[in-house]
Image 1 (spheres, one colour):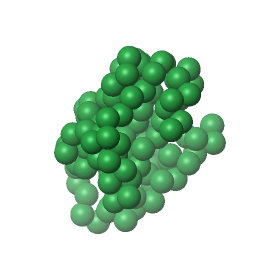
Image 2 (cartoon, helix red, strand yellow):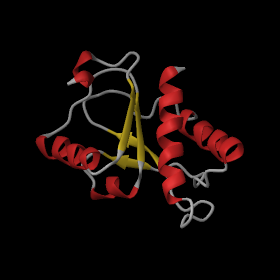
Image 3 (tube, rainbow, N blue to C red):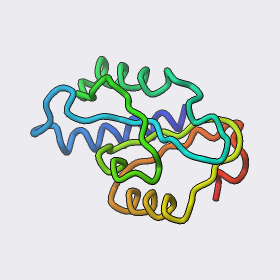
Image 4 (cartoon, rainbow, N blue to C red):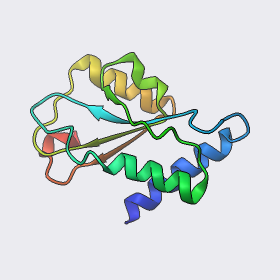
Length: 123
């Protein structure tokens, strides 16, 4: 519950700052694909449900299509929010870790729902 409130607050703050220039559906949230054997594709309805709620209750204008982006891809930087979930091991290469670090340092929001993930996801 607290995690959802933090996510909503962060997204609301970001959306408010961009509301003047954002048209309906002009930005997207994405699911983060990672290596290591964990099922990154778990919980396929969580982000779409979050998008529906934010659009209906907060008028945020988030594109309802939720793409998948790989952690090492330059496309990561096109999404203000990425969600990571699954069970099992999470492994980032040096390049992937640097890409994610740069994304976060630049203001990107990464939420990890690590229930059932291997403790390696905490590193």
